[in-house]
Amino acid sequence: MNKPRKQPTMHDVARHAGVTTMTVSRALRPNTSVSSNTRTKIKKAADELGYVLDGTASVFSSGKSGFIGVIIPTINNANFADTLRGLNEGFKDQRLQTLLGATGYSLSEEERIVQQFLQRRPEAIVLTGGSHTERCRKLITNSGIPVIEMWDLPKQPIGKVVGFSNKKAAKLMVKHLYDEGYRRIGFIGGDTTSDMRGLDRRIGFIESLKEFGLSPDRMVAAGEPPVAMNQARGAVTEMLQKWPDTDVIMCVSDPLAFAAMTECQRRGMSVPDDIAICGFGAYDISEHALPTISTVDVRSKEIGEQVAKKILQMLDPESRDNENQTIVEPKLIVRDSTKKQN
Image (cartoon, rainbow, N blue to C red):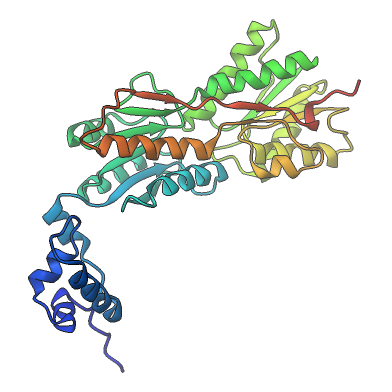
């Protein structure tokens, strides 16, 4: 049986390059005084040996870990994936990497991940939303590490904020539906105890209907977040059994809206002639569905770009950034699924 190959060390690189170990250590640091020719020779030796710099040692010597801790509710969401893409693009030339944690919409799991991240001294932490356990808030506050809360506008932010009002975003869609002539408006969402952003959309829905003098009673909880597409059938069934005259269903996300529309079509209902459908999030599926689905674009990638920009400002000792809140305004996208025929 072959023995596992030993990982090359800094001493191996020094011997291969014909220099001292101290020279290799200095050459691999930023802002080094080692000459360009020597650095090139050392880099070539390191590449040939497959040497990777020990990140732990680097943290001790520089006080910088080189990573940003990012915590999102789930990786099974195209919106959050776009936000991460915007973040990573913002960091690509900055020697910063994201370390990802997914909470499954659990605040206790978020607390656990934060504690693990803090043990590794990230240069900043990014949280999704503004709801956290009291201990989680205390851990972050006491750490002194820069923090950004995204995808929300918390009433009591821990640090900087990059986000939008989910309540206001929902109201954009309700106003469109009202202006289009819909009056029997239903809402399908998830369990409101864990998804605070979904809860805010639901609150926005309720407040808008009351402002327009309409009943907000037509609401169905499809299940725990993230609400899966296969839960739409039961939710549509419940909606139409309780309120068979519903003329439009507003869904908490585009995938749910697509599945709800498919279920209505399976029942022989024409969209939007018999019943209209709309979603949230501007997923690709809403643009390519038949008919195309009206939605709200929360500009997920731009949120990530703005978070990256804000973090770089926070890590720059010469920055004079005094803006604590960056709002990325959502945009209404009206498509065929809610357009009434003239």
